[in-house]
Image (cartoon, rainbow, N blue to C red; front, side):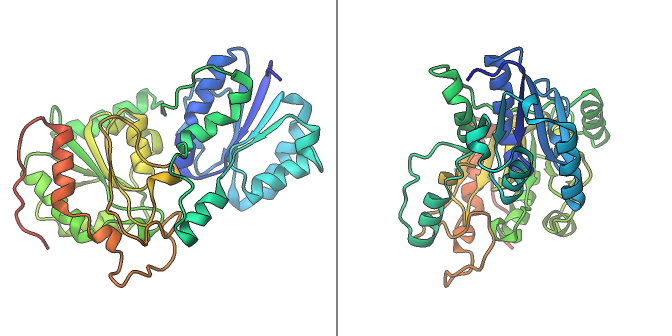
Length: 358
């Protein structure tokens, strides 16, 4: 079945996943130029896809009123309006929505495609250490696999992308100018994450940011407003840092990253923001692993991790650490190692001298 008019793509969360979904919008439109793409997501994350030229219409569902708003969507959209419905989430909410909208046995009665979440292999790795995911595709490619039956041997690009507008770029430019950062090699640091279990120790980030600043690489702190790490580092750093955590919209963040030479962050959405704007990232992985599909992909990007028999222990950083050394997977990633990798990316020569640890 070749889509001829409209496709609906569904993904309610999370922020990083929606950024990793962007290649699917572009490649559908490239392979089928006349097709209109509708995107069904949540109001929390809809803004990250604003200005995307490949999306014709976005329907945003407020999680607090999701049932009534999904019913509103159903009342205004007939299943026959779409040649194909792609469930890129495969959550309980998305399955219940499709069941109510398309009816029982909808997979047999309507043209649908559903993401393979690879839950069995991931859970097997988490619970037994048996790794059947060594050659697993990235999450970006997992989304693209949804249209492989339609495009055949067509080569698909998994490059992510975001589209900050003129206002977003102007806001970023004003911030850079206000703080006298024009022409400098800026390093954005994302010390927070959706769950604290994925966070490199605060003290390590504090030493890292102090050392980068002393070596002439101004640091910008990014993250969500509710994360405690950026404010903690801001308060304890020996030199005041530019703390923009929770102060920028999604696309303002993307626009600001265009001014950065490097991003250093936990396994979080900040890494995906950076790479969508062609900025290399150092992604610090502790309880999670690359095999889950969320590792960085740009040539200059790197994953910072240590080999431990207890890794991975969590798919998202939730849960109690069972290692006798609390979060050893993160604590054993040294500031020196991160700095060395950072310098390899931002300059071909140079040396950072540590001023001591805290």
